[in-house]
Image (cartoon, rainbow, N blue to C red; front, side, top):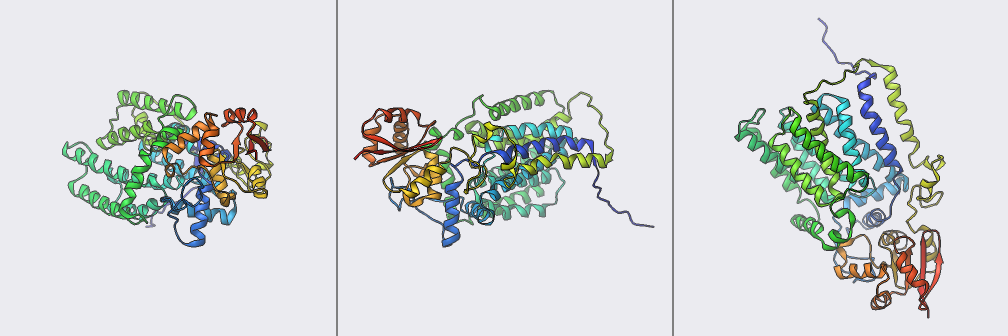
Length: 503
């Protein structure tokens, strides 16, 4: 008797093309998101310092408005080092490419998880649309992207274990993942949140003797793995104080009150609208679907909904959590679905490959040769030595001028501080995206100066004698300076103006 064997076929069914179309669109969109200055360049500089000195910085270093030795903890040091290594190997293009690759892997994994829950690639594609749309504001290059795959891995392993479809030894991956995660980005705390939700939810399921409940032995194993994962969090430069660092970030007044992504979502913009619609759809499905969320899933939805409601930067985690639940709930609606052929053929495989040809063409090594709309190129620097897809609000030309004519105490737009830290660190910055480093009153002064309110008095109090301003974000200050005899324009380009105090 011959032994049965498995054969992997390169031919795919038409059903699979649905999510692949969405994923290709996600890949194209993510690839074309410009490299904004705020959360890339200063992280890149810290990664460079760690690479060259083999020491994680612990102080301010760059701001001339604060003591050089002002304490600052670089909690994402490993994520910053990885960004710099990518830059060292492939310039700006490689971090951009890796951002897109991680985005596709993350949403591909979420789609696969949704397919395992509902049995349909079409329903998984529908859920993917919501998860991707509500997350588009997060498709930028920064250390947060190193958190996406660990988060999804935690969610997948815990969900499969709770469903009885994964052996407990697989959970031993969680402490190992945590050692990476806790050093790469502050979102590591969500790993603990996931384990807590599964521990409490599955215990309730067992107590209530609900269908599919785990045994107490299985819950005990989950608790033991949770303890090991919690201990793994202490393997970081700050050890137990890492929790204080995260709490400080989440409650920092300047971040919470002055930075939009830390504030609650409003019904404006595609991402926020997709988030609100997904909440409504999930509520309607909970009423009309035959599927009932487990206690664990109720905790996950409520917990991550509260988190998303408290800050736009957290919406992506809500999307990762709810996409499989949306697909599963839709599969249990009391309606008859449409039948699609599941026959596999080579034509479907060819179509799948063709879908990702545009994704390849918009990668940073090729994108500048594409005839994209002029409106797009007006938002991106093109053909500069710094690299491709650098956003036009990065003061590339202005900083080149400052390299030739350095000096003075420079006041500037906040995002400019990030690029200055990278390209001209010896100049020093007034403020930068390390928001929690600066006192709240200094941020209020920054806002007042930007609005042209008491700007001469405030600038004099700090000793600022040069101003590097964004024409759009700081237009009120520019209008005031045009009629002010104390200041004269020193340099200007399409997006930036440099002013200096007259002798």
